[in-house]
Image (tube, rainbow, N blue to C red; front, side):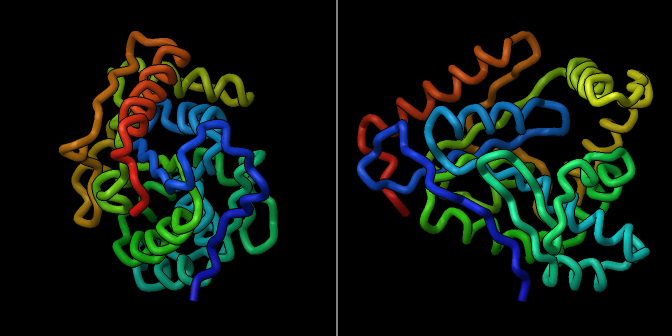
Length: 246
């Protein structure tokens, strides 16, 4: 039995919705800006922020450390089921089996491995049940690749965040430089193309825009503008009583 959970703490609700459990699902390709956006929106709403990508990265890190082949789907599924992963919604820390791995899961090696690990159906199934359990008693802003299409097809608010591939590569290169790494635009663009292909063509929960998701192209928008668009969608969707708990 896997033991992935979120450390929720006491989070004041700044967005009053009369005890309704609200799910905001934010999906999109790598480099579109999902994590930063979801974190800010969750903070504004007083919801729990969940970065599902951190879960796959944690499993990938454990696989690399234990030298499990990324092609061994059976052992990867066992890792996902046994992993003790804790997500701190307050400061975005990630713990794997009691160890703070927040920085360790952000290396290029782990990122590449996580892309492969996330293609394993058994891993996705193991983590899907955990992702759903987090939202049982909490309003959440959850971001990933299949939140609105697979994890929470009943989510009241669905956003598909996208951006031009060149802009996504530029943003990733900027992130790399800010963390002290050397970001080569050409290499990063190539990595994103490979990641996009994997995400869109995998058999289990491929990256797709849910039919009822709001598409936001952030290429020429500031973070503040994208954030306001999402908050406007939330306000419109919840102010008329439609966003009742499921």
